[in-house]
Length: 615
Image (cartoon, rainbow, N blue to C red; front, side, top):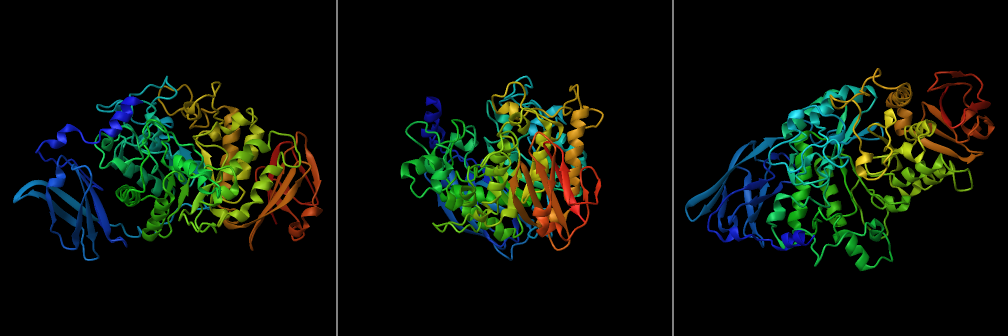
């Protein structure tokens, strides 16, 4: 810890007092013409680079201002990419007197046709979440590479296992066959850390795919392959922190580039301090300025250069890789004013673009604060279109496993949705049963597959955008040792050539695995074609005797969902639901395919869900 603190405080190594001038980095490395916002700020890093005079001579590409900061090894160049600027190569010269001591050929690219109006993920989609290191190893040649600190060790649950972009591409047919329409991949940028580098959340280069996953060009190939299948690609981004081995941590632009303390200070993880009207300044300050972990320096988004760097980086990846969405990690942890400006800038360039923020809070009102358009008392507008429904996730984990009571059991699902008045747009919320940060859903249900089926049926028929964590469809669990994040992110069987089982194929799955796989696949593919589930209205009835009934409906279609949370079969009389059922005489149950010609009574097996398309 003390070594890390010394590193942070020693901002300027002795080498900067040398007269030698070098040009090490320019970021973003290239840009595009045709953006609505014509401003561009380049970070330039090199030994004594601030002692140079900078010039640019390219029509429409104008150097407005050269900004010097505390560290003489940095310059921040404010440029304008005007409407008259054409795609091409602009030369940026760095001179001392009349001598050119550095030159950078800066490419301005043409935006792809339709780039600004691209579609994004929505309630029409089903998202599949993949941890790339744990999904499939398609290219063993990139497992261990020179210069990368951590090497592959599949025996270490917290180590790198070798999954990569090629592995994901090799199994896109599997993902597509499941009915998935959007792919969210945990962070792919370089994480050159000594340990725990596999998860991707300690970024050491914001403009580079980790070479153990592949290259930037490989990411483009994956994007093309996803889009050719009619699917969407969602990139995981991290603005709150970087990795302690990030290249700039050896030579910070300024002392306030990261939030520094006299000694290591961890965040209190209390995101509620931002919405708490009674929160102390000390608690709020510790939340936003404290470090997420000792190896995750907390970036200071109040610094205008940090702010511009992060905003431009996200726009760069959207344009470069043709992204269809962003998942923003730890969304409330950075300075919220900067996050609002980021969201606004994204929507300025991509009006239809969707972003989902990880706002891990326990109550709907707390999560709703962060959704764009919320009527917040302090006037804050996040410009964040979508949030994750963590309160519903909590309710799902309890609803099927506790006794039915006034506020326990299946009524938990009812009560969470009854608070949807908090959200500006309840249909634009991501619903899920588990993800990479929590134990697998089956663990909370003591491996009861019936309860997993109920949860999957619920997230695929309720309001919002469903997300399925890789392996849920084949009964993956956290395992016997339920400690640590590594067990929550176990390898998908069949993703490695040495695996004894290949669960990517029906032949390689057990009967139980095929049963749940087929169940989820049928539901997902039915949902894909069901507009009433995508955008239809939602109406539910207070659960009675452990039975919860709700409807999805529009002018053309009505779907009835009945959940029986009891350990015995239930037969219910349906006259209570006549405000919907009086118009219908029959229906088809989706899972079984059975026709129902008498809707006056319905029998629902124990711990199960029936989904009826009413006729």
